[in-house]
Amino acid sequence: MIKIVNCISPPAKVLSVLIMLSVIVISCNQQQQQVFNADKKEAKPDSLKAFLLHKDSAKKSIALPGELLPNENAEIRAKVQGYIKKLNVDIGSRVMKGQVLAWINAPEINTRVQELNEKVKTAYSRYLSSKDYFERINTASKGHGVIAPSELESTKNKMLADSSDYNAAVLAASSYRQIGKYLTVIAPYNGIITKRNIVVGSFVGNPNEKPLFELENNTALRLQVAVPEIYTNAILANNVGELTTRSLPDKKYNAKLVRKSGSIDNSTRSEIWEFEVPNPTGELKSGSYADVKFNFVRSNLSFIVPVSAVATTLERKFVIKISGDTAQWIDVRAGFNMGEKQEIFGDLKAGDTIAVKGNEELKTGTKVIAAVSK
Image (cartoon, rainbow, N blue to C red; front, top):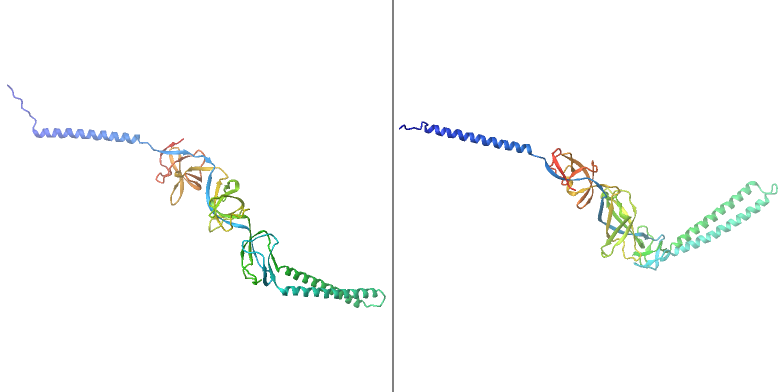
């Protein structure tokens, strides 16, 4: 019987096993590389939520502070010096145009008026005398050689001088009589006395003193509002604002826009708008602060986007426009902020595809797929 002896030595067996393991490892690496390359070839651009840009009417409701002012406000002063003889009104008094508010006592004015009246009479007498003399000399001069021509001319000049003196005296007396009328202080228009700075016996008429009275006409009030620059060219709906005051928080009043200052204040970057507020019952008080609600509308249609679409950095404000499959930053200027919506202006047109969320990490040139929401 023949016995078969295994001729493979133990070291040879180990080498064979190592060779087989190496073949297996190389095969696995090749398979993983093929899978990785396949995945790399199949990689696609990221999908990005987007919308189609369109124009709409931008509307904005805001509340701004304002100040109520009297329609008319006069400081009534004395034009002549004297002492207050009588007061007919006090603070809070309602007065009519032409009503006497106070009397000023200045006896020297009356005396001066009487003096000037007497001077008028004297001047008139001199004028009549010289006029009569001239007429007689003029009649006598018609006879040849009776009156010298120089005498006739001198008499005529005397009459004209006396006539001028008489006219001057009349004007002086009239002027002082007008000053005498200033002894009665009268109301220039209907209104209410808001301040009184005198009592009976007060000396008045000095240039630097406080006014005798302050008179306001509050049947209609002026409302002044500083409107921020961004809204100054927008349209105010119906040209009307709705106001409330701190003293009457439960009541609302309409204020009609009547004029604009036409200039932007450099310190506040705002324009003063003035409104008229009817106040027939006198409920509203001049000097009060008011909260005024305005509804602004842009005169032309503009681009309205979600607030999230506008990205802001230290250098710029932009939206991401998707052209084909490429992202592009487009610089924009902000208009009305309407809560969740933002009005923008820039190098854009209707129908552009805009990313719903602006992101500075998504650089210009990045490949993306726009998923346009309907």
